[in-house]
Image 1 (tube, rainbow, N blue to C red):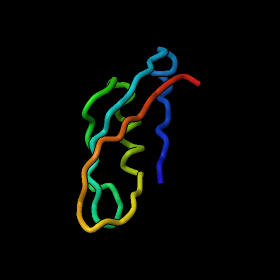
Image 2: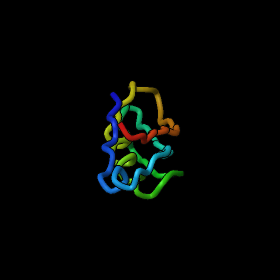
Image 3: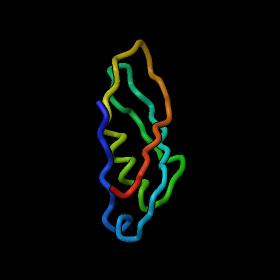
Length: 75
């Protein structure tokens, strides 16, 4: 399941857009074991990190790693 990040009010007011990259390590049961910011605007990064930690994946035989891109655009 994918959780969308909230768009921080300050970033919205400042009209900041962009992509934040989060590297996640997924445990065998499908939960995010570890997540870290690998790129993106600092005002958007924590919102993306919080959302990435709530994602759930299909259970697998072992741990896996990947990068999630969160795009922030005013709506």
